[in-house]
Image (cartoon, rainbow over all chains, first blue to last red; front, side, top):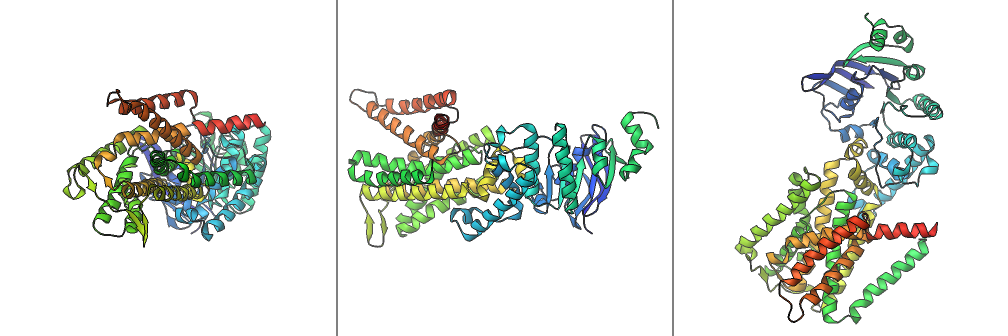
Length: 253
Length: 321
């Protein structure tokens, strides 16, 4: 069983369910859009998949392996990469170094290898540099590699986070509203990049407010409302789904 | 700075470092040794504070653990070299064990917890007969390597500064590497670091142990050099001093730790000499050193919040452009 399998997952804060009884399966190489009104539980679902929030109920498996009890760094180690909605950058490090951190999971040289400059250190540094170079190239950030990450404008900080996630060579990429706050040209670049990534066979989950954008990219779309799945299907099916229209427009069904 | 000028600067620095013990008088030489030992501790603390974002106000405890380990082993007839190797290992091991509960805390909480740890360890040392109680350990033999006896201050100066060079090299190598980037990353965002697959808890613990190991090494040399250690050798003031040195020099740079250590140590020594003149009350030196820590810390935080070395570096950059 490859791909991501989420079954009957629930997460509540106090008495309020942010996510309840959510089941979905994302096939290998699929680009899945997740849409829903504000407070539908999209970001919570992502955090439960990445491990930053622990699921209260349910199971999550990645490529047939149960992951719902693993801490976030181990899930990252298995190939789950998340790009948060808010820019989380490593201050005091260059853009290139920020991206290089992404390659942590694919390498292993530790403190001893680094302190003694053992061959493992040199091999990993070469590998990290190559992966970071490729990720910077893909996101159009090569020219900023030596800049202090804190001095980048917001849009480029978002791109840098995506570059960091790509540098990890993920098997599942979670993107939480990557287009929010981007200018029109940046948005087109992002769509182009996501298409390219999809064509490489990477499994992607995309939370996005902009329904039209998701419709252009996604193979299938899952619609959340009040923490539960209310519809799932191809972009065409979702567009005409009465419950989806109701959830978005607030009209009675 | 280009590679060549950097090499030349390093070469000159090394030459001066090696030549200094030959020209210093005995009082100056002991300050020189103390400076080197202190720098070994502060380079480690700078990694912990500047790169991993964790504050320790109990670093002198690890210095003490190293000193007691070396002293006890030597007094029980082990070769001094074993004691010198065991000192950093014991300190690092203590940090690994104590760090598991301590590093669940952050920021001020961690600072206070490490302070409390040192007070507890001091009080234990004060009351344990096998550790010499409040009198401490006396008659610790000299460091020796086969037939080579380290019985002069000059030989300890070289041991100290070679150890410091090793510590600086180790710290530099770690910082410019995969684990080093991971440390710098988790210092600013633990959540994002975890998402990149970094085991944040384990990395914090490792750098805590590494910084303790450096302190333990300095403590080991100190025990052989002075031949005497007691709980009174490792006061809280020492731990506070280390933090002040790191902050004054500038967090997040090894050279900052070295510059801060040199500046503060020399200033405190100068005030000590003023304070121990005839007719000056006996309590003055310790009051002065507390005062100088306080004044320095406030002045740096107000006027050079990033510390001396980073401020100089950005001044240079501005002059260049």
